[in-house]
Length: 170
View 1 (tube, rainbow, N blue to C red):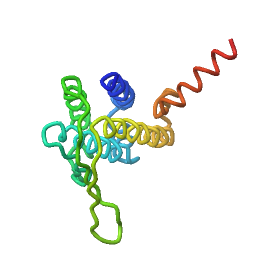
View 2: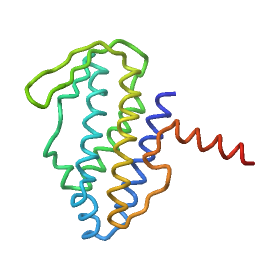
View 3: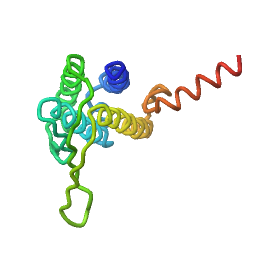
């Protein structure tokens, strides 16, 4: 079930990359870096890496970020990173287990909260977190005249709601 959900998330991300890849180089650069899309993608990748790292360490460290990552300026690096993360999920052992979560909680001083969670809960969080950022990406690209399908950045519960409306209206 989680593998399918992660795969669906990456399907949405692939649509974003496909749309950007179809642009000429100048438009691609403006849409990818000039709009902030690349920073959202890097942030999404950071969260995925944090959970993937926990598969061997037992620790999800959301403080570990790759700010100023080359993928923020280079479309191909970001695309390759996304593809690598997707591949890693395909072979990941997602059996539920306890994990320790570390995350800073204050913007005024250094305060890291350490708490107990489970792998499934953190995978679910990453899925919803990344869908949320895909919604931002969709808005940013629309400002550049790039239209994405309605389902990009749509929460699973919202998709279920719309499916139920369609059935009711049949």
